[in-house]
Amino acid sequence: MELIQQSPDVNAYLAAGEAVDHEHPLVREVSDRLADDHPDAYSYAEAAYAYVRDAIPHSMDSGDLRVTWRASDVLRRRTGICYAKSIAYAALLRARGIPAALCYQRLTEDDGSDPVIHGLVAVLLPGESAWARQDVRGNKPGVDARFSLGEERLAWTVRPELGEADHPELYVEPHPAVLGALKAAPDRPHLDRTLPAEL
Image (tube, rainbow, N blue to C red):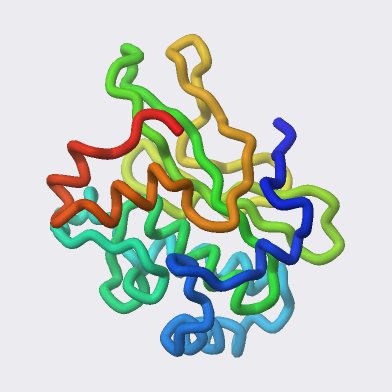
């Protein structure tokens, strides 16, 4: 699948924003700590991926009722759903000057019901000609996502026959439907009921 930049300027994917607040001191602190042991861009991107995937539990898996949507909040509270964790990973990448974009899949249940948008991150490492999608939602039985620049190792592969789809657009900030749902949710059970099904 060919990924499509929403901005023709790759530097847009280095910008700080309301959600991807990589200039926040906590984001910088975590970034600096990870970079101490992983000075080159590739090893840093992989280490930051593992950190967000493994050290920040997915709130639906852990039962955490809090909703986070700003990268610094995700890192401070150490919780979030796929969207929030993706925002945090994008912020950690941008903090080291690595272009990072937010992107999405449309997933369903096994019978094609209950569609929902799932959040991913695309990274463009130095020397690479193509963006590589990464999934930091967190592994669990039946889910084994891994950092990869070659063959994708996402949590789920879309099933077009069920109406699932990969959205190729690469966003600088979260899609408005995603950010709106996160901001409007007083708690995760409310968010569970209002997750966007379409972009």
